[in-house]
Length: 428
Image 1: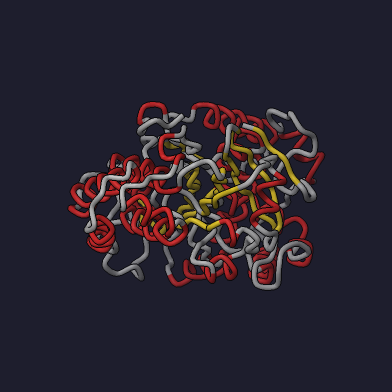
Image 2: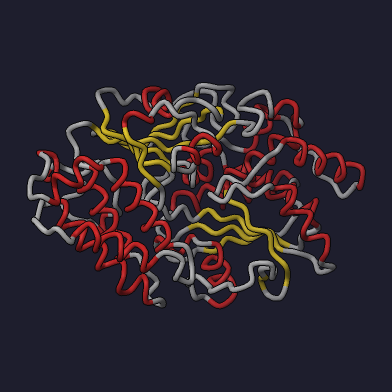
């Protein structure tokens, strides 16, 4: 994993090659965070979070201040849950934060717990991510020795599978050791941990909280756009390059982010938002990396991933590989995932190799419609979105493949990242 930044190194070490920032170095760089139970501090910090316009960096972009305010309607003491599962194979930003700058995340968790009156903090790290867990455990020891650990912090290690990072699956593991997404008919009903209301944040959201609590909303809004203030972490990967975590301000063109990460050469497009995200075709890569412009282009930031697709690669084949991987990541509790996703992946594989079938495109769209919105979680929805975007972004190739004339890149090595235990097709 490599890291780089174009900004003020807000969430990343100022010097390259730093493996971990200890508490002493952390305080020297950022200053000591004085989170307290003083009501004036609580009000001013809550106001700063609200005025900053900070939205969650886990994919939903829900306003952080609004999430905290909703807890005030419940008199029970809440629990702060830090979702550091990072289930997206192409993402490394959670691992970077927890392994390299764990104190920034813990600072943010302390701020959230103080303002919401939480009784404890639970930090979830996947069982196959020992490096991050070890770094956090060391950080907790450093904080306890220094007398700056103000809340009880527990580390939980759920299974490292794709759907285990879904919010209700994380809470399911904490409550009953069953890492399965829960069906939520009424999403206004608050989530709970051991009968306590819960607030769930991903690691980057809390790192941003820690910075705003120190430096204020005006400092935070110096970067980004009016509608999308601040900076964000993006994991960029592509042709023969390991994923790179880069910090950028919202509004930077997608193509500039790709070039900044060191990827050169002509591109056929880029996958934005992760394996449940959407493709941007080559002619739309100048789109600003911000929620509004990406939504207008049919995409979304998601969990902060950009996979650059080289011009020699095949978007249809890559989509088929992702679909097959995602089909294998089902929790096995809903028909749309158990039956619909494998059928969708098979159709895409037939399209990728150019099997002539005039009904194939209709079958793909039919299977996508059949899984969309019908699962306990959004796992099948993301696959449907990905597939539809591929049919649009690579429309010429789609019809050529369907006519039995696959492009030269359909058999090329994949530029996607898949866990070694679940390799798909001829992926790396």
